[in-house]
Length: 419
Image: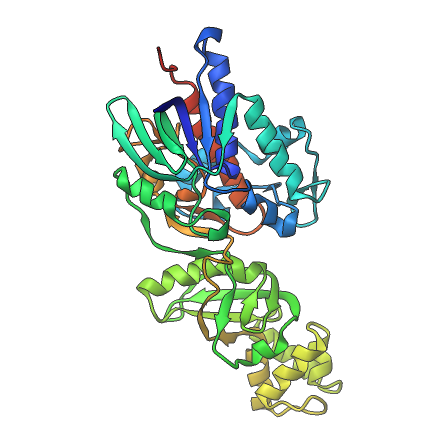
């Protein structure tokens, strides 16, 4: 039976970061002859698949401004407490010291100046190794059993005994990368619950077959997407780039609202989505613009704000002549359609393409100052396995860094095993 002081399960962003800070904390607190052993295991043949595809292969490391308002899932107060332990500025400093220079884009997103996610992955592996962590893969964990002295872990590469375990398995998004939900089963086997429903987050949405929006496939433009209850109460809205696809909608605004729609419909089947193709313009504003520009024609007025293809489609659907005078009723229909098109969403593209998971181990079951389980001492959590998911823009990576830092630092400060 192989033994280790700390076993990190999962060598993704959170796992590599937790291993790094566990190693740094252990070296800072332990005598040179009592160095702790830190082992990282992962079931993948090639490490970091999720990191390598993030941000279109560039890896959006973080955002220049991060707060609990950028996340959903567990309570904002709990999320804030963890985020404050390792800020976006701390993330920038860490990567710069690791040799990865970052650049900030107009959106506030930070990427490596190399525009290569591999730069980030290689730095994470190097820092974890430099901190004393051993990385082993493929070695998928299939069972964790609590013992009086820690845990017995079954892997397909052999059994391991560990004093402490940091669970960084990810959620269920992009299962080909290794985050196939196995970590949730491990957490439940150790007494934890899961915040449900578990649904894809940051996922494209599917519209009813043959919907006219699918005929605009490839069109990209800024929009505002709003989620309302069955009674019309506004729940949440997002403004950002939107992409029309052959099956529905994608792009930042859609990805951000997707988890809210998926979760809300479990308790309110009548929740509805609507899209404003003219962000910041109300229905009355649009009607007034059409009246003021009636000599130019409806298409010309709309074309000032949206692509020609969409402008003509909206006029056709509203029964509004593209040129010349527009009857009042048709004008009102056009203004309403342009600013509040109902979206008959029938589903989503699933975990296979989702960028994150909504749901997971509740933060209420974790000690926020250490990320240690309140149920099973010696068990720590970091990353997407927890019930925290951020909007698009580097926020999920920032959660991985912050929670990984807290969990790793706390686990590494414990006394090492004695012969």
